[in-house]
Amino acid sequence: MIKTNSEILDALMHLHKYGIPEGSKIGLTPFDSQLTFVKGGCTDITGYPFFGKSLFMKEVMMGLTLNEGWRHCVYMPDDGSDTEVISNLMHKLTGKTFEKGYNNSITEREISKFSTQLSESFKFISAEHNIEPEAFWNYAKEANCNSAVIDSWNYMAHKGEPTNPDYLRKILSLRNRFMDINKMHSFIIIHPKNPDPKQVKDGNVKKPSVYDLMGGSEWNNNGRNIVVVHKASKENHQPYQIFVDKVKPKHYGSIGECTLHIDWNSQRFYDFDHVNNIKKYAYATEEVVKDPINDIFAVTDNEPF
Image (cartoon, rainbow, N blue to C red; front, side, top):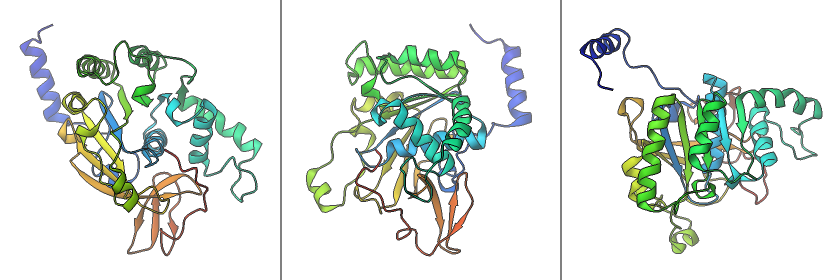
């Protein structure tokens, strides 16, 4: 339907009076300065296996929920079973682990208390379901969610080859329109091509570019925001480099990067203030420490994806 002159004028007057609305923030200043999220947008996240893309996706979800009141429809079979994903989110919410024998081990009472909060803000589509993207987005709409989270794209049921350029062009265009019309935000985790084995061995892995994504340039051509979660190696002590490689519309962010750390004890990301030796979390009390690299929870080799 063609907009009338009156409709265009009203829209321009509204913009002049109120300005462009701010995007939603996750609560971590270095990242919020690079990118904010709008209801009616799309963000595609990539990074090499075991480099933290799913871990960061959960940080984004929790930050948007606790700071902005967002509700999420979640399909994350690439991150583990439904129970594992839910327990990971509860760990991030409470700072308490499901592993027994630690000072921060969660209690049954706490599980009962916080499961209600999780169920109100997160709607889970079981990993046992083989669901197509369009059906999933409709589920998210029916559940009155603000975002639809897919981890990862390859785990969805597709009517075509998931990395075929023609199929991607069609389905991503459909996604963009769906999110615009229904004022939702799409998050999709995409696997890139494998890194150079020599770089992995040397511990100096270069970040993947948008053209390294499985499916190639269509993600860049039809995407809105593209985020790369990266670090020099898979070692736990490495800080995370979060690259924003594409922003659209541009007033919701800018191309660039920021550095974040992970508190393995609480599973939360934080910004480290080197001047005051303070950990600044998105939704937790600031904590004074001497060195974020040495203040790491002693974890096993099971680092999150």
